Image (cartoon, rainbow, N blue to C red; front, side, top):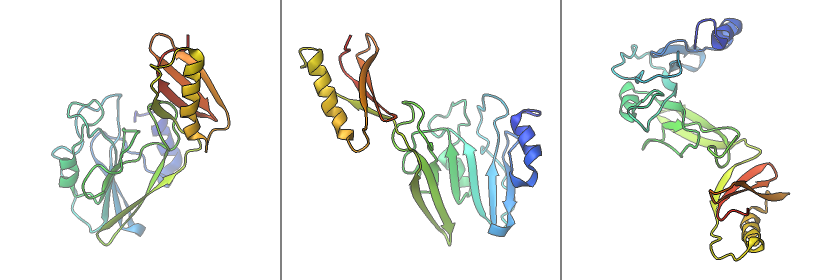
Length: 219
């Protein structure tokens, strides 16, 4: 968020239809009709090397559900992208933490299922593998129930195929086609091509879904 930047202009244009956080310190807004208080912060530059939840003074509890939405890196304490910890999230007393940054999400990040990375809606490359979607979360009465809703129409997968025993190019293609047949339920067209000479890497394109397999180059 930068004053005069796109999010600043959107905030002014949308008015009370949306809330856009504007500080790299923790901010809040309330949804009174749902008795929900939402917490979050903004990146005001390309780097946010401190945790906005570190030693934060939480506002007085008004009995609302507390939901945290933040781009945060749980994996590295020296991250350039908001190095938040699970301990900080728990200390703040959030009922749910919806996180961004890790695109290949796991099922949950904590023992209670109240901290999750949203992942991605539609994979764009090999760093967003598998099916994309969103979490639909139901909070209330001390319970937290989450259901994954798949939205993606195409998916990227990474697979490994051993072609060390193949004597020639035809044998390699045969092995790769057999591997690709495992995805027959989604494969309408398969094309195989070398993509990076010298790195023993081969990609296949399957009805808009990329499949990457390591093995000997076909060159």
